[in-house]
Length: 195
Image: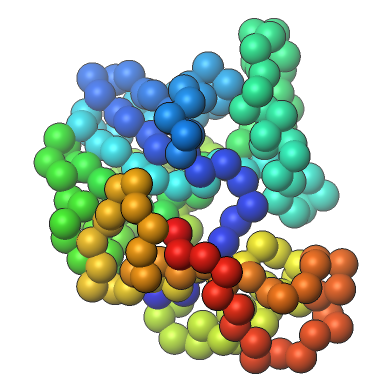
């Protein structure tokens, strides 16, 4: 499966008994900074999601703007930005459903469960990351032309491995900066890291 790699803050969402806790990949609590995601409380208790928080600026993801939101401590400013510049939570994986771990299941199965869950509980500002099973090179070329961060390639049969990098998820970025994305030859996957 090939997905766009969005430029934002990685975020786990824990839903338990109508309570939502948001946590960064570095185990920092982000719940207070993003009150607009309180809508996640509508999901079944015992659900855990993995995804990316993004803020759009001029139609493009702005890493600096979402990082600024993640650092805010002033309650009035947090509330104002949650209304005027809300984040979008782009969910790409399901770790627990109703308290039952699904991390050992193949990615394709977790993704199907995630799609069914979000279809049953549509939430404002929460989207499942779209993916394609074929034409990864074409997606990569388009992402590079648009100056986006890159593409994630995920094995369909792979389990979710918390806290570990593996060859099951590969992050590929264009070999040039966004400002020169149109000047490089198409067809060049560059594997930068394993996520």
